[in-house]
Amino acid sequence: MNKSDWKSAEEIKFSLRDARKVSIFACGVCANLSETGGVKGLKFLKGLLEDWGKDVLLAKCITACCAEEIMRQAVRIHRRAISASDTLIVISCAAGVKSAFLCCPDTRVVAVADSVGSVPVSRQDDPVARSICTSCTHCVISFTGGICPLNECPSGKKYEPCSKYPDNGHACAVDPTRECIWKEIELRGDLDALKELGRIHAAMGDERLSSPPNMVSPRPLKRFSGWVVARIRWFERLVPFVN
Image 1 (spheres, rainbow, N blue to C red):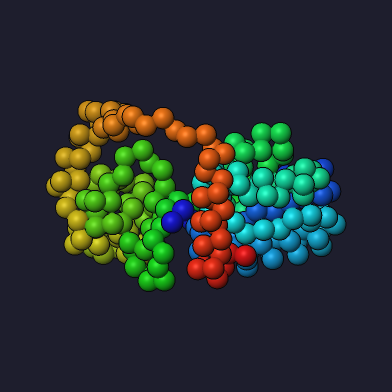
Image 2: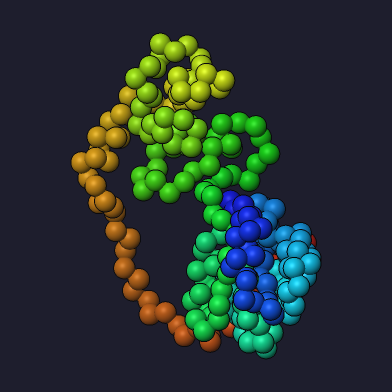
């Protein structure tokens, strides 16, 4: 999932400094699992905004904010409340906020959460689950046993450990209070292959495999409306955190 964390109260207040009437959409998938969105996050933010003197005209959890079709359908259903609002607040990762900008080009859109990276849906205290994958252009976790070295290594090393490895024992050379994550990567991954991958990445630059072209002309968005409504209703019955 795309993990998100709340912005600071100071930043949210600054972003909403001129807003009096607001609408809120909360994502029911990634943000919900991050405990920022969903019904829980929606109620928390609504109460906070009301304490700050804001008039909340709409507070809805939608299936997924990142899908433009779902966002557009939600905007269409709640167009009156959104039109009467100064601002549309979106509790989601950056993809959901971007979707709102696409669907509401004439409405002020405000994000209240920050995207911090990709993580598995897990409660394990394990380096694989703990390391948050950030957008580093070329992912290497196939060769590190699923551990993101950029996130876990204080030296910021991606293709190989620092110069003091393996002479520093099990302690990190930069932060002696923690264990060297490259010891774990060596057990789970392939350091030799990782170095070779680094050379490949350096040589190829931004070169990437191209996806096959879409040979089917996209249908007008209006023809998706009935399907989208049906899927939203299905998710509302299936998933308890969508209201």
